[in-house]
Amino acid sequence: MDRVFGEISGIVEGQDFVDRVGLAAAGVHKPTQAGISYSEKDGADSIVLSGGYADDEDFGDLIVYTGMGGRDPNTGNQIADQKLDRGNQGLAVSMREGLPVRVTRGSTHVNPFSPPTGYRYAGLYQVEDSWHETGMHGYMVWRYRLVKRNQMPRVQVSLSSAEAEPGGPADRKAVSVQRIVRDTQIAKAVKTKHACKCQVCGTAIVTPSGLYAEAAHIQPLGRPHNGPDIEANVLCLCPNHHVMFDSGAFRIADDFSLLGLEGVLRRVAQHTIDPVFLTYHREHYGRV
Amino acid sequence: MDRVFGEISGIVEGQDFVDRVGLAAAGVHKPTQAGISYSEKDGADSIVLSGGYADDEDFGDLIVYTGMGGRDPNTGNQIADQKLDRGNQGLAVSMREGLPVRVTRGSTHVNPFSPPTGYRYAGLYQVEDSWHETGMHGYMVWRYRLVKRNQMPRVQVSLSSAEAEPGGPADRKAVSVQRIVRDTQIAKAVKTKHACKCQVCGTAIVTPSGLYAEAAHIQPLGRPHNGPDIEANVLCLCPNHHVMFDSGAFRIADDFSLLGLEGVLRRVAQHTIDPVFLTYHREHYGRV
Image 1: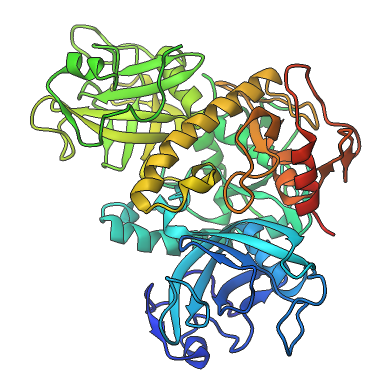
Image 2 (image 1 turned 180 degrees about the horizontal axis):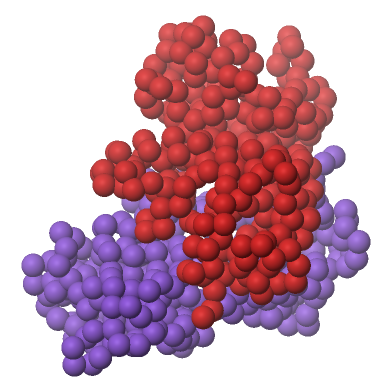
């Protein structure tokens, strides 16, 4: 798949484009008509705000975005309920998986943040919330709360490697974006191999947009641990067991038996865990 | 209790103090000798870096801080293992509860970020990780990863009220700090009333530093929901059921029976939930 999540190489925030064709050619937003660039399975990577939805609210760093569908193609009025499918499902997947969404504003989206003409790339946003409500025209619409990402967590993943840190804020931001996306791919691979089932309890969290699990690094990323971001250093856990593992409430022996909990770590043939990381975790976490 | 978490009114980041007495009088760090201002139960609110620990690492926005105890009072050398008690437990509680920790650097902490003389308040940090390791002197020490908070999540709590958002970045930051602390108090009260037991499954997550639960707002904080930050709008949930509730995987009827899951919400007499918030959640979340 050639769907790119995160920054497009060579494109900077605030960059202007004459038209949708130019925006597509640059790789920022590939569809030349649709407002959402998405896959129902992999998520939405980009949206364009062009004033089509009366319900949209744009506060700059915070955007309340309306989903797609249910509109009269001639008048643009909402004439039916929107469904949790297509771009709406794509945005829900981006939220569930923590994927960054590129945002571009068009001049037809009347707003202080929009360009006078053409299109302006506004940077990466995070989908923080999705819900449905009755829109201005009396039909159900899906809504998404998008928050600008450079004001989002500089989470552990953003400081994952020693070389990422000596630089100043500009360096750090650039590295952060790349790393989040890279981590996302490793995380996704491990979660897919386990079908989102927790390796401790077997639970897969069911949500309306699909199954949810978390990728837990065994030897943590970032200073001073500097664990590698590879599948052999990642577990697929439910949120409860992720909290417990990170705090050292349980640990894992080299034979994969659990220490502090009953049972044995659930494994699948395609996902090999390197015991060197389990040793690191055992030696650093938990009450001694 | 008069332990203040977060900013001290009238004190700005970068402000200098002549000595520890002045720092204490300003309310930034009340103990005049100890490096950690803490309660084992409520958490640590402040630390002072003064060069006492050879193991400390300070990268400015990221500090790897060494816990207290086990040192020879004359030489300052580590002569015994540190325990997860006193300030070490306090910092672990701050991590578990997401409390901000004030950081001050003294001139004796030799570092580009330290003042030439006296003490300099460096702002709020978040405890992101805690673990133990064998320190430079061969004894076990507790270690904490502290990350500067203005680079931390502008989480939902920081945009909780309509008046918090129209301002520029400076306004937003100031509001953010106050709100995080306020939310923390509401969250703490609800979690205490439920003894950290999930109101859906009854699970209390056991961690080495104590029980862990999450406070889930029923009608979300922040635009456009603008749910209030009051106990009647908060549930005590385990991380798994928090994820499920926020996604609408289950909802709650006015009689507190669960919709989408078996059973009834667990309640305690001291915590009243207002059905108006349950209605808001039912009407906005979940597959329709």
